[in-house]
Length: 351
Image (cartoon, rainbow, N blue to C red; front, side, top):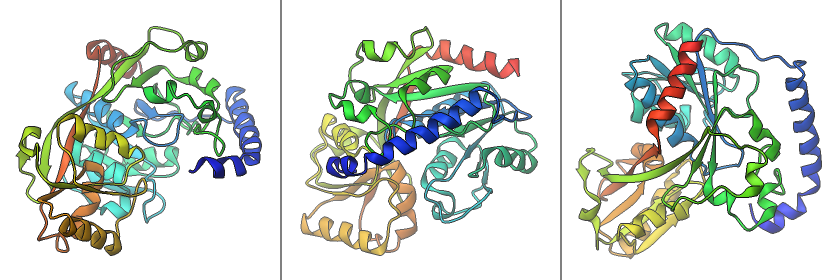
């Protein structure tokens, strides 16, 4: 949202703050009650809107549970999907929905993790129906659920973008619409674990203003690692070096497009043109025609996009049949994985 618009809408920040404050007090005083699930629940979420790395974090913890031989499923609200209510997305072997029906994030998680997945705005009802559909579930990971306090979680994981912590604009530390936060910074204390996502940047010492909200040994650093490039149509794998010097059009509809472009640049992949769209963009034929126009106008060899965008572009394979499309493969990692794995398993077994 443009800065001037945020300032115009700033009076609504007071109203939103009061609503959030009262709601959190009601939960803290047990006036609003949380409901415990029949299996352990791990929540992965954020305070800031967009781009902190919630979905890569969800994929990381889901795969970590899989490594420990735990039958895990993922439940998301299905942001910007075209459906409502509970929906089983996958049983871990087969997808039952399209990306528009389920939402791009959970569809990506289904592809990456090959575990049962589902969507539901109401997480309490969603977990019950999910367990009915998949009785073998031994744990559930909630994607983007830090603010959803109606359901008890055995491990509450908060992911924070390192760039946010060092952003010079103090305005961003206010709640929306003036700032970038869904809740006041005091909500940090609810987290059991904090992951500072440095993405592709160097690790920085935690600033003093942050430590007054959270200061213990359960703070970890996460980062991204580009692992290769995949063909959208046949899934053929390529090394990053194979695209050095190649004329490509970069296409993305994510919260932080600069991160994607930075990755390409750091790997000496310099797009000759780009198509930057809004986060969670549901692609239309108009968007596809724009991509085609940029591709042929620049005489490019290929289109390079993100995995999140790739899952939505698959339904346009006919319209893009004459264009080579690839997506960047990335892996989210956490420093001291052994320590966080131990913590995760202890919480699961304690249930």
